Length: 294
Image (cartoon, rainbow, N blue to C red; front, top):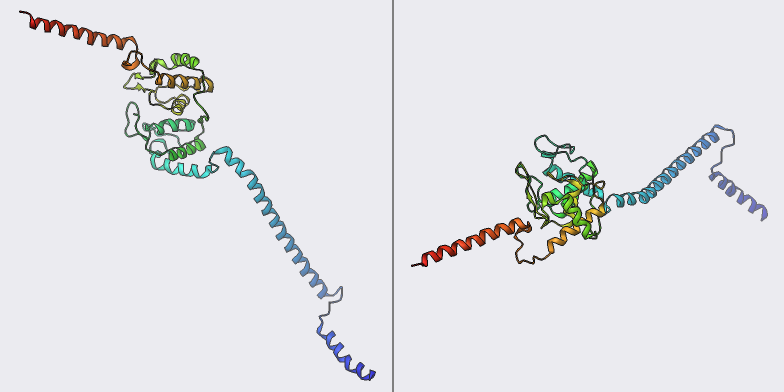
């Protein structure tokens, strides 16, 4: 029985060995080809792994650096969208007078290079721009753009032209007495001692400050619109600008002890009223009594 079992298992074992794929002997052409295939596969896998590692490192670096740069450029965290929207607004409403590169157009509009967001805020927020027609002075009117659109225009001009930026925080934390002295020294010649405004040469005038908000006054000092000089931080420090704003907003809210402000332009207006009303009343009384005399 043992002989029979041996003879019956022999073909099976031989058949199993026949089913296996024999490895080529070392040093043969088949072994060399196999090694080359394996080496190529290993290099391919190594290249893919290196590429994946580079992509991962690039993504990590961008996510770490990009948000910080965005936050530094724009408080919304998305400056590129604001700049792009501002570019579209500029192309639609401003490019005719100020040029495709902010360089300005002769006899139409000045260059916007270096004016910064402060000038944009003042001109657009007060409705002076877009300009309706060429005049001696751009009149103040309701703004054409919304607050969001103004911010977008400011972002575009600041990004491409640079210049003074607007401040943040409370603009009325200055010294009232210092503000009054600075206002009388630098501003009263044109805006009157109480900010009522006044006439200038060549059909121009210094506007009244009675309706101006804090940021508009600060932006005007930074940008120097029309005949107004530029009061940069070298001429008036930020604290001094805040003091002037404090003074202007304080006198706007001050009461008139006499009952009528008469423009708050001082004794000239008061004397004119006295002569017109007083002398007129006297003349009327004289003529009335004359008509009643027998």
